[in-house]
Length: 88
Length: 487
Image (cartoon, rainbow over all chains, first blue to last red; front, top):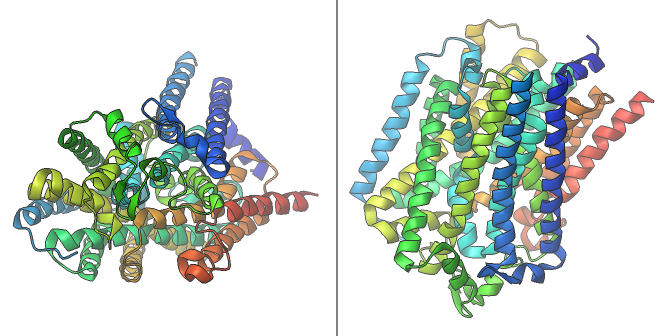
């Protein structure tokens, strides 16, 4: 088996699984963009993270939201993948 | 700080440690083949594997290190909680299922699934070994730190004690035992963090938001590093005075998780790629909740000043002692100790697998039977355990979360570019992957050596975490060499 064929084997999954993977990549892009923005703000404009919000500051609210967001994305992605598997 | 022997805490410690050893002994009787030893025969249920994932990941760094880091550095410590969890999104959405389709025992198996090349195998095995050792050091440091107040023993005796116990676990039972130890420990750790958080809020009489607000609003907050404005303590810049250090750490944390060998190996312990995905989701939920609670553990330690100025890692156990006396202290410390036992076992398994399976059997071509492979791996596990004990004694006094951050940087630099390119890019060549791994490994380790962690004020490289330089460099070499070869 050639190297390229083996890559195909790794990625050789039914069309619905490919849709699942694409959805995963979309979610990843959204999440990494938010995380990157948070990091850039903390790096170059840290005073923004000191803005008061919900009794706390934006840094804490943002950090908690990034953690909670990861859990929500994981649950949603698993639900979506399960739905796609059921349709196969 | 001076500590004395506490009999109740010692009794609880013995109970939990003996329970851990009992599970190991029982599970060890089921190990018949190399597949059982390395990946529990690939038959672990996804729910168990998910909590075991969390158990693996919520190491001494998470429980002892982050709580201490937040207690001493406020928001900058909380950055570790955010980044450690964010990394799991990369693992879930990008790596989990494709990796499960192409591996067998180790990270290297996934690389050579496509690129049958001894150079790739060797580079991957050495990288696994280095990352595992860097990750082992903080666990051992955490163990030594815990034993001091718990048993009244010296740090060095604690290190030798945990080393001996872990060598016993890994040399007898392998992944079956490690999985169940991590499963139980993962649950216990979540309960412990929840109990401590409730304790902090109960003693202060404040709700979660009000408690955090009370820290931010305090214009003369007493912290382990002196009195300061609470709003500054809860903003970036206390630890990471160079802003690029903040960015470098954030990059290493989010890209490092999906490249840790002892995390990757757990994708092979479940039967199917879908099980790999489901267990990752369970892990993210459990780990996420835990990391939210670390904020209250760390700030609770600041609020009550339950800190050891000479050892940041003791902030959570000392907070437990303040809230619930010797019994609570004993429970929390014993769970932390079991945490370390489980994590170190997993790390030694990954390192031993790299030496015995990837280097000795495949790279050097020693044709062995299943029994001989098992024996070789167990002997290797003993050797790695002894090395970990020595390194742990050398690293005495360092914050364990900080040390783990360095392991993440090395993993993200050496392993992730190779893994991503092998899984998703047809143009990847063996030389590209091999040189990318070596580049990531040497550049990250080299920058740590000439950075402030080792050289202090006379550092040549200004950043404590090398990720922002070494990760892009490794990606560039992997893709650049592959493209040049394809031309």
